[in-house]
Image 1 (cartoon, helix red, strand yellow):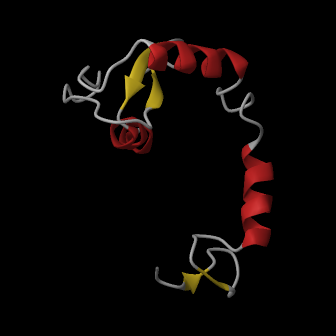
Image 2 (cartoon, helix red, strand yellow):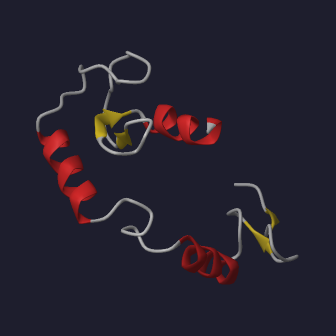
Length: 97
C-alpha cells in the first residue's frame, strides 16, 4: 500500500484520512439511519441477498452479480430499492448525481 497525506492534515496514512479525522468525518456523516441505511434497509438487503444468486443480473448494468458483497441499490428517487447491485455500479450512480 502507498502512504499519502491525510486529506485534512499532514499526517501520513494508508487510508484517505488519519484515524482522528476519520472519526470526525464519520460523525459529520451521521448514523446509518440518518443516511437512509437503517433497520428497514438492512432487512430489505438481507431478504434480497437470501433469494439472489451470483448469476442474477445487476439492475444497473445487466451483467451477472457474481460473488458478494453487493450493495442494496436505491431507486433513483430513493423511495425504494432495486435489489442487490454491483458495488461499483451503485456507487458510480451516487457520484453522477
